[in-house]
Structure formats: structure tokens, C-alpha cells
Length: 144
Image (cartoon, rainbow, N blue to C red; front, side, top):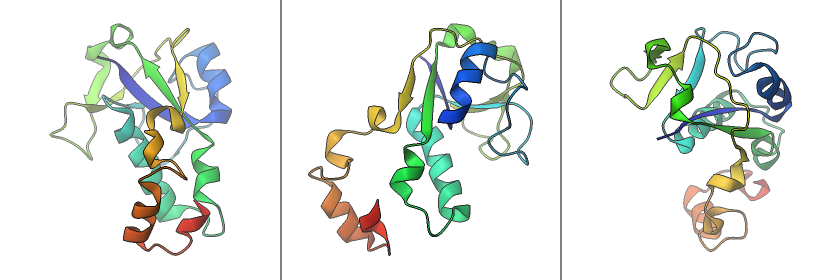
């Protein structure tokens, strides 16, 4: 079963060239503990970025534009040395989340955009989109 990591599109070329976890690009969030954050589902990884955006994002920005900058790296589990995987202190009881203390070679691994993991009915204009917007009643949601 693969692992997943979400990052910004601007980091992908370096990650593919040097490996995930190599210290050649800026960190997504410098204040976080060392390591590469991994999860067993792409949705969980994406949720963390969305939570961060909701809490700290620019209030004048457009959420859809933010999501367009994110990429999901799919990592074959044979490339993850479990001896280098430690529990994430924020999710101590979840075996599907962790921090990897090393560099992972992701050469040839898929890199997906957000739409690749979002069912069509939940994308803007999809059959469930209007219902979700109506139920959320979030100011600015229509700009998504």
C-alpha cells in the first residue's frame, strides 16, 4: 500500500531530482519537526494543508488557486524504510501517519494534482458541489 506526501508544485522538480526529504529546497512549514510527513491516504495529507490554509491563509486569496499549487507525491511502500518512520506526535494512535527521518527516492513515482484524487461530483460544477456550498454557508465559498 503506497504512502503519500503533499507539497507545493514549486518543490516538485527538486524532490524528483534529489529525493523527498533532501535539504535543498525550503521546507513547507519551517516550524514543524524534522522529517517528511507521510500518510497512507492522499486525502489525509491534503486535509492537513487545507486546515493550515484555513487557519493561516491570506483572507484575500482564492482557495481554488491555493489548491491548484498543491501536488501529491505517491510513494511505493518498498521505498519507505520503516525503521526511519516515526509516529507523528499530533496523531500518536494512527499507524497511517508518520514522519520519515531520511531521504526517499521518488524517481518515477506519480505526482498528482488535487483533481486526481477528487471525485468529479465534488469538483466545482459537480453534482455535489452546490449542496456542499449551500450546507457550509461559508463567506467567499462561491469563489472556490
